[in-house]
Image (tube, rainbow, N blue to C red; front, side):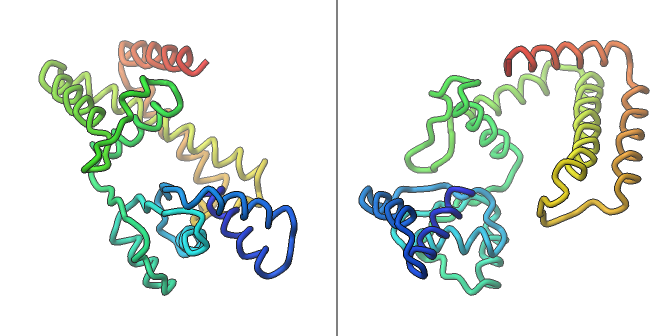
Length: 223
């Protein structure tokens, strides 16, 4: 989204105030013709305005990816015409998992061939099928109790990291703007981290060993 906003701002600024470097950037981009750009979760007026302004200038062909009702509501509130943009609606968890896997493919953490999208549905079909098969196998041949404990410890550990991350960001990036700010900091994040850690400590030793094993594998992959 930052690159789209920059292009839109560049287009606006070159129109209002001549700036050679921004004008050259815009001219070079316009010479190549508009490119299709996926705009992830444009559910606020600022994101939509930047994308549509870049589209009106001829820089991009926006593909708005997110919940269609929220995108259209934001456009209506900002009085924006989305007729020149294609909306790719996102809904269920399987698609979210496939989208995340597609991002991993683009980063090179999974085979890039898996991120190929269907020409008709515009979705990563190979990954959707793979995710569906993996889920079916896990559900059919794994003990429910084992899955419950692994899901619990994974989710709780994520909550602990998010809570700690709030404290770190409030200290290192106090000027960071966001749509929501956690109240009663540091009380709420500290209480959240402690409570989640307490729940994790109530899980079995075997669950902890499995969790540490998966964490080690993840670290090796990212290193």
